[in-house]
Structures are given as structure tokens and as C-alpha cells.
Image 1 (cartoon, rainbow, N blue to C red):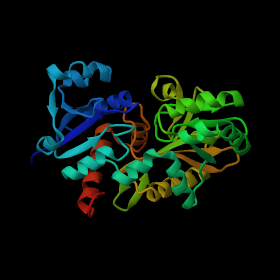
Image 2 (cartoon, rainbow, N blue to C red):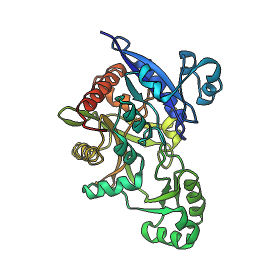
Image 3 (cartoon, one colour):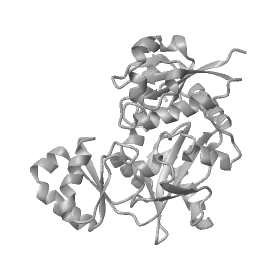
Image 4 (tube, rainbow, N blue to C red):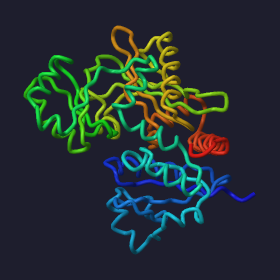
Length: 351
């Protein structure tokens, strides 16, 4: 049998391009060569795709790769992608990557891919709209308030007073459509609000204020199995910083993670697993997803950040939870591809 040509797409145009490089490299390295022929496809910061050799896959940063593309890689036009691959493994993160943009392109080309379709991917990036949907589903979410650029420019003092009245101190400011904790700040007194909102507005045209959550953070990978969504496991997160920062997520030694959880009681673990499945379904996720949340000190479970994809570096939640279920990296990647192919075979119209 001919091997399935799997295009591993990584790099990209977002603030998370370096995270994507680590994910894509690890996926490329661990795909089962007996079943799949991996094709490394690098997206540059202009959105162009390049077929790159292993020498470039192994580079340390996306800048290192980009500087060598013209001489060592082959530019691939979008319309020619179907001649090169049979399936797309999306290892892009952030804007234009797991927010529905690349998914729409792949749908037009008729190429199956990992993760959900356009709408669910877009919801997976928009924390403000997510909360509205999850709240309507009866799930616990943080109290929040969205502030647009116009609101901030026209009535800044009033907005700051609204924050104080709604949340007290501390509270959190973040861009609603960024990942990896980029642009996130904890506000402990009124004088800190302005700079935090301005920083969030560097990344998006709105800023999201949320209540500060005091409790234990968790993350769960959910697979879209034939009989319904199934959580792989649950990871308990203890960052070194006041919140789970970019460095805590990606720098060695900056965070302790327990899979299975160490401090979350068994009865609450069962509640969390039910809630993450409900969130997965409510947002229309397919293939797989990563649902993050908090267990508060009073025992309440809040869903804080449903993601339509997951980081796939060697130490990621994805591979830790797969290992807890006895799955080697190559095994769980193969499972994702099998699930995605089934989901795309069964769809009517776009996913």
C-alpha cells in the first residue's frame, strides 16, 4: 500500500510561531514512517508555504529557517498543495493557524486535516465568545468584561472604574485572541491598568478583563473517538510565576505538572472530565482539543481556555497524557490522523 503523504504545517504568521516550530519538528520526527510519508511545510511570516529539507526543520528558530528559504527550500503555491500531500497535520498555533484561516483553505482544496473546522477553530481562539457559549451550556466560566479600542479611547476612566467595581483587585487583562499567555497581566492596583490594557491592544483590537482565579489549574486533552469525546487524562499545573506565563509553559524547570493530578480529589476529577467533554461538544470541536480550567478553593470548576489544538513539543500536555494512557508519541499521532480521516469521511460540506 502507498503511504499517506502527511504535510506537517508549522511556523506561521502569529506570535506563537516559535512554539509552532517546536510542535511541527516533534510531529515530523515522530510520525510512523511505516504508515506515513511526512512532508515538512514551513509557513513564513507572509503566509507562504515552503517545502523544506530536514536541515531546515532542525533549525533553532523560525528566523534561522526564513533566512535560508530562498536558497534551500521550494516555494509551494496553495493551489499546488494537493499534488504534494494527501493530508494536513496542522502544527500551526495562533492567528491564521488554529483560528479557522488555514482550515478554510484546506477545505477549499479538499484536503482532510487535524483539528476542527473553520467555525470551531475560530471559537477556539476567541475567549470572549467561548465564554458566552459555555455559559449558555451551563458550564462555569470566569466573570469577564470586554473593552474595545473605541471604548478605551473614549472613556478610559469610566472603564477603569467598571473594572474595579466588577472584579476588585487583583484581576487579569488579556488579549481575547492570543495564546501562550502573550499579553496577559495581573492587575493588583489601579495604576497598573492602563499599561496592561495598552499591551493587550497591541495584540488585538479589544482587551478582555477577567476575575483573578485562586485555585489549581488543569488541562485535559480530549480525543474525538467514534463513540464520543474521551479525555486522555488530566494534568495539574503549578507554574513558578503568579500565572502560567509563556516562560512557565516553554522554559525547562519553570513549571511542575502532575499527570494524573496530585492535589485534585478524585470526585472533582470526575466532574472536570464531564465538564471538558461538555465544553468540547458545545464549541463543536472535532478530532481533538485541549480544555484548560481551574478548580477553585471552594470546589467550583471553571473552564477558562478551550483550545481547538495543542502544543506538541516533547514535554507538552498532549504527550504526557498520551504516555499516561500507554501511548508512545508515534501511536497517539497515528491515532489523531485516523480520527481526522474518519471525521472528514463522515462530514457533509465543510467540517
